[in-house]
Image (cartoon, rainbow, N blue to C red):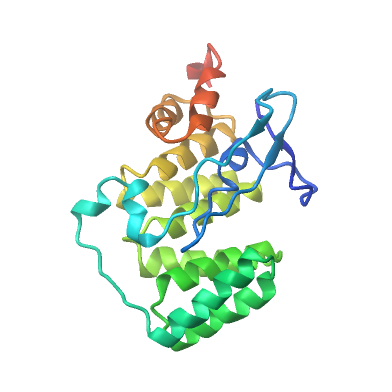
Length: 232
């Protein structure tokens, strides 16, 4: 049983997953909010849905993982020239000039290779121009170099779900939860990725029950739970 999107802003030929309908507009950029609309198919009967969340910066990452504020996370102040390049990139991105934005984020990282937000946002710009493979590589690198942050994990999981690579998205979600047990989005990612593989399990239900605190889409999936799902 699977409910899919017919289109995402009219740009994709293949229909994304249940997870994508909720989080494709919830990828995290630093410094501005991004919203994308999605048209749901007749099976879901949910009409048009608002994005699952607005964009966040690292400074408010605890909004996703409530335990982050209580942990010691290494802070990094970007080199001023790198920050300036990133700010210009953000402005270009808001105008839809993603190629130029990506180039500036690369410049920022050339100046300051440890600029986490610039790397995260570079991945999102690469995805926006159809370079999903490059975006994936950037995000996978971030999950290894800075696992104390949850952003790259959930953005990577979102990307994999958009490509219908649900088993891989499940793996990423499980890895995220090793570091961020209470991340709402990581729990949602795991629950939805399991469902998109046809696994309506107790584990998936528990994850969605937790995530519904923040994601109304999780509640929508729970409302559609098959009576005999436990048998799958």
